Image 1 (cartoon, helix red, strand yellow):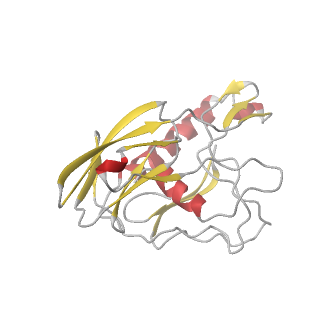
Image 2 (cartoon, rainbow, N blue to C red):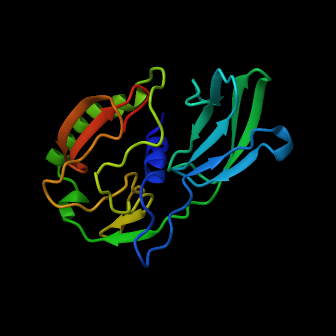
Length: 223
């Protein structure tokens, strides 16, 4: 599963927004189980569509297929997915059924940050480091096995505060950068960070952009 889906499931288990902050977009929406109710649903980029049904055997979209989880097909929508329509399908006792996911405009906030200029205008040495780190990380997101996890995923802290900044569009020193694909949690230094599910740590490293990072594999994707 793409990272957006796991993050959406994690955010559903998190507390609501802090006082004075706007509520986050609904990260998980359901497709009606019967055709009479319609087979089109709208979701924000970075969200997840859940299509429940009995006896499902396969789910998919134009790019790949996968196995249902917990009696439902789960369709992640990438955070960078542009506005428009996506076709999905599922297979079960009724045969193949199709539906449409309508991707809404990205509703996330914009943030302008002043950072160390060396993080924006990279030296030759830093560019080489970033290239090496990317070569380590990118292949991890291609790993696939049969899904095996329970929902909802657990929060990363025993007493998790509201998650912050998911999807924020950022500029560093007035230069546009990609949207923030993680959720930020405030905690004191030394606070234990918990795994969202059982799995295997594939990589723990200190990266140029991400800082101290742990890539955790839960047999269907990276968290």
